[in-house]
Every structure is written in structure tokens, then in C-alpha cells.
Amino acid sequence: MSSSSLLDSMVEALQVMPGIGPVSATRIAYYLLDRKRSEGLAMAKVIEQGLNNISICPHCRNYTDEKDQECELCSSAKRRNSGSICIVESPSDVMAIESSSSYSGNYFVLHGHLSPIDGIGPEELGFDVLTRRLKEENITEVILALGQTAEGEVTASYIAAIAKKLNISVSKIATGVPVGGELTSVDGNTLALSFNFRRKI
Image (tube, rainbow, N blue to C red; front, side, top):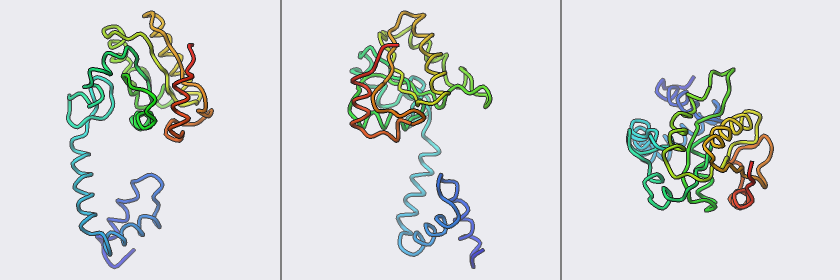
């Protein structure tokens, strides 16, 4: 407990961030108060604006600036006509792939993986939206870029079954993505190789 209840509230609020405990939160709070008040206020305003406005793209389920508005990637005619769709678990995976410059097609973001124990099934992952896209769009290849975990493998198998019923080719990124790892922990060059040497399944 400090000399200020507002400071205590700041420290507590900062701990909502992953990896930030009481000690780190206290250090950040004092740093903002002592040296970066104006920057902290600007940051708070941007965070508030983002939390109030950033929504889910109705097309790919990535993040977009406004509700019911397509994201910038989906708005690209070049991507729309690429004939491929890359399935990932999270929006951060899209950012990792984009930074590697290894892929320029469509995306679909699951926001997780199948996990019946946690109550996460096909409906929560937007499989109805994905299936509709596979039926209605000119998709010739589904690329599975999911984490190499047991849940990721089950989810990949489920999606592959849907695509194959629609006679769509299915491939899976390969080289360099460790078992049990996530795409965001893989460097850009390794991700590029993973796409270049993806294999049919």
C-alpha cells in the first residue's frame, strides 16, 4: 500500500497485462508518474479508443477498425483473387506471417482451437463462416498454419475434413515450427520456409 489510493489503483490496473506482476506494475506506474505523464495519457487515450472501436472482421475474423467493416487485408482485391486461404489461431499469427512476407493470400482467424473441455467447439471458432467462404469463394487451397499442439492438430484435422469434402486442396506449413510451439515465437525467415515447403495432407 502506497501513500496514494490512486497510485495503488494504477498498480493494480497495470497487472491485467500478461507477465506484469506487482513489482513490474509498481515500476511502470512510478516511471509514468515521474517521467512520462503526457505520454502515459496519450497511451491511455489510444488504448481506450482501440478497446471501444476495434472489432472482428465479418469476413476473416481478424481485427478491424469498426464493427461490421472488413479489415484492410480482406479489402485487397489481389488477396481476394489469390485462391488460397490461410487458417490461423490468433490475429497475432496473421501479424507474424505478414512480417515474414511469405504469403499474400486470404486469412481466417479462429481465435483459439477446438477444446471440448473448455467449451470451445466449431461454433465458437466460426466454422460456419469458414465453411460458407469455402463454398462461395473461389478457394483452391486451404493452408493450415496452426500451433503444433494436440489441440492444434485436432483442429487442423477437422478443417481438413471440411475442405476435402468440398474438393479443396489442403496443405500444412512444415519446416521449423516446433512441436508445442506457436507461430508468434518463430522468426520471419523460418516462417517463410514453412510456407515455401508446406506439404499436402
